[in-house]
Image (tube, rainbow, N blue to C red):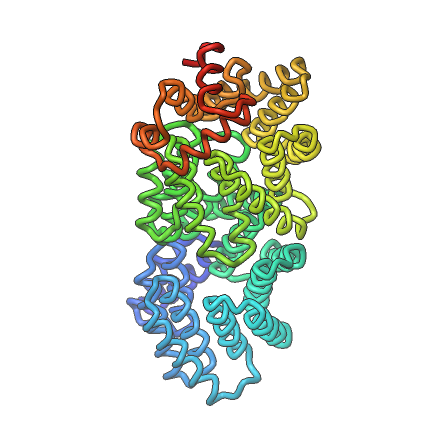
Amino acid sequence: MRRAAATSVLERGRLSYEQRAWADAYEQLVQADDEGLSGADDLELLATAAYMLGRDDEYVSILERAHRQHVEDGEPLRAARVAVWLGLQLALRGEIGGAAGWNGRAQRLVDRAGRDNVEYGYLVLADASAQAEESDWEAALVTARESAEIAERHGDADLLALALMDQGQFLMRLGRVDGGLRLLDEAMVALTAGELSPIVTGLVYCSVIDGCHEASELRRARDWTAALTRWCAEQPDMVSFTGRCLVHRAEIMQLHGSWEDALEEARRAAARPGMSRAGIAQAHYRQGEILRLRGRLAEAEEAYRSASANGREPQPGLALLRLAQGNEDAAAAAMRRALGEIADPTARAALLPAFVEVMLAAGEVDDAERAGAELQEIAAGYEDGALPAAAAYARGAVSLARSDPESALNVLRQAERTWHELEAPYESARVRALVGQACRELGDEDTAAFELEAARGIFEELGAAPDLARLDETRPERHGLTERELEVLRLVAAGKSNREIAAALVISEHTVARHVQNIFGKLDVSSRTAAGAFAFEHRLV
C-alpha cells in the first residue's frame, strides 16, 4: 500500500509538471524522490521544477544526480545532454571553470558514442557561444548554422530554436538586421506553438526580446513582451524569468509614457528572488533612466551606481545625467570613452544618439555631425522603427546647430511621424520641441508656438522637468542661448577671462572657449566687448 501511495505521488508530480504547476510538481517529486522512486528522467523533471521556482543551487545539484544516474543506466548521450545544461547554468553564473569541466565531460561522452546525434549539436552550439564571446561573429554564425542543421536532422525543437535565436543575434551583430530579426521570429514560432521545453521557452523569450531592444525594433519587443507577460501569468508560482519580464515591461511602459508604473516595475524586478546579476543591473539602469528624465538626479545617480556594481555599463545614462547637472566636460569624456571601447555597430547605435546630444551641448558640432552620420549609416540597415527615427532626430539637431532650420525640418518631421506611430510621447515631444525651434528660426512664430506648446504639454504630463527647463532656454528673450551660455556671457560681460570663467564654473578653458564662440555666433558679434554690450542692452545680465 505504501509503495502504491508513493507511486501515486510520483504520477501526481509528473502531472503537475505537465500542467506547469511548479510548486506542486516540486513538492510531489521531492516526496517521490525521498521514497526512492525517481529515475534519471524524473530527476530531470525535479531539476526543472526547482529552476522554475528560482532554486538555482538545487537545480544544479539535482542535475548532477541525474547525470550520474544516466551514466549508471548506460545512457551516455542522455548524460552528455545533462552535462551540457550544467555547463550552461554554471557559465550563466560566472563559474567558468566548472562550466568548462562539464562541457569537457559532455564532449568525451559524445565522442565515445559518435557524432551522429543531437547531443553533438548542443556541443556545437556551445562552440558558437564561445566564438561569440571572442566577437568572431562570422565564425559563430557558421557554427550556429551547423547546430541548426543537426537539430533539424534529429527533430529536436529545443536545439533548433536556440540555434535560430543565436544565428539571429549574430546576424544583427554583423549589421544584417532584417535577416537577424527574421530568424528571431522563426525561433518564436516553435515557442508560440508550445513545442519547447519550459526552460528553453523562457530563454528564447528573454533573448529574443533583448535582441529586439538592441535592434531598436520596438514593435516586436512590445508584442513579444506582452506574450511573455501572458506566459508568466499562466504560471503564477514561477520565479525564473519573471524578473526579466518585469524589466521588459518597464521598458515598454517607459516608451508609452507610463513612467511611474515603469519605475515601480523596475523596482519590483530588482527585488525579485532568483534574478541574475545581469537582470538586477538592467533593472537598476532602467530606474536610473526614468529618474533622470524626471529630474530626480541624485536618485538616478544611485541607480546607475547600482547598475554598475552589478556589471552593467552605466552609459549613456550617466553621461546624460552629468549633462543635466551642467558638467559637459564629464559627459563628453564619458561618452568618448564608452564609444571608443565598442566596435559592434548594434552596440554603437545604442550610444550614438546620446553622444550627439552631449557633443552638441559641449559645442563640439563637428563630432556630433560625424556621430550622426554614423548613426544614419547604421540605421540604413533598418526598414523603419526607432533607430531610423533616432538618426533623423540627431540629423535635425545637428542641422539646427549649423543654423540650417530648413534641412532640420525635413528630417524632424519624419522622426516625429515614426515616434507617433510607435506611441512614444516623450520622444515625440522632443522632436516637436526642435521643430518649434526650427520654425522660429524661419520666422514662423505661429507654428513655433503651436509646436512648443504641444511639447510643453507632454513634458508637463510626463513630469519631464529637465526638458521643461530646456524649453525655457529657447525663449526668444534668451536669443537661443543655453543656460550655461548665459552664465558664460554674464561673466564675459563682467570682464572675466576664459581662465577665470573656467574656475568660476568648474569647467575647462577649452569648454569656455567653445561656449564663447557659440555665443558670438548666436548673437552675431565678433568680440567679447560686443558680446558684453549686447548682454547689457538686452538685459541678459
